[in-house]
Length: 313
Image 1: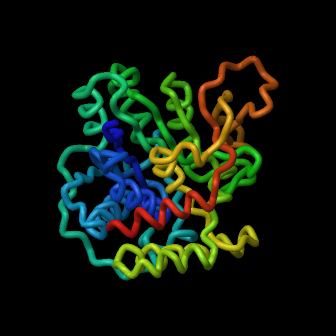
Image 2: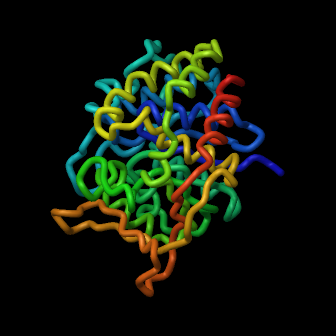
């Protein structure tokens, strides 16, 4: 079976970095056509820089990186330096990238790539706010039917919100974009906080990263050392959840994850619950299911996969 062709849309972020590294370490399963950066965890100038830093750390300098949208569709940008540090990749001391940012806009790269391939060949993997994806769908409606699947990190149901009481950060930053994507009709698989909060980097799991003994292993251990301080204080957990790597792990080993095909709608008007992913988990409405909403994972299998693949870089 040939590798799945994907575009990673990202706002790195330490957990984005680990997700990208996992994808780049798995060429038999995943063919990364390019990275498109979006404003989110930190502003666009930093997310586009961080994406190139990660490619260079992995030794994959042939993967093109594109700058995308620098603000949400209709709102002021909200960022998360309080979690990820001022650079978005605080923790390891990584050099500035030598790779150049591609001249083409990330949205145009998404559109052109979808148009250049037969329908059903390209999977979109958003790890941040959905601004780039929604903008592509608005600008070129013909590409919507070309998308094989969207596998994204975002939202929450039982775990409620991590940026407001009701909303997860990625969806909250640009709820209008999320609404466009979830109404698009494209098959969607969602990695919400309900599953990502079960992917906890305990001390033993982080030691396994460090013991790889390579620059990648050390950098990942230092990244999780940095951002776990926030999550352990906030949630009282044993370690930091690795949100975004759930997306790329699902592409490689979907059997590690379980969920339900349900209807998910995005709240865009309420001051109280703006950005909430209203998931009909118990199927109490007659709304048509539009997403596979993941609720659980085999955490030991997930971290075994992650450690084994990172050791390849």
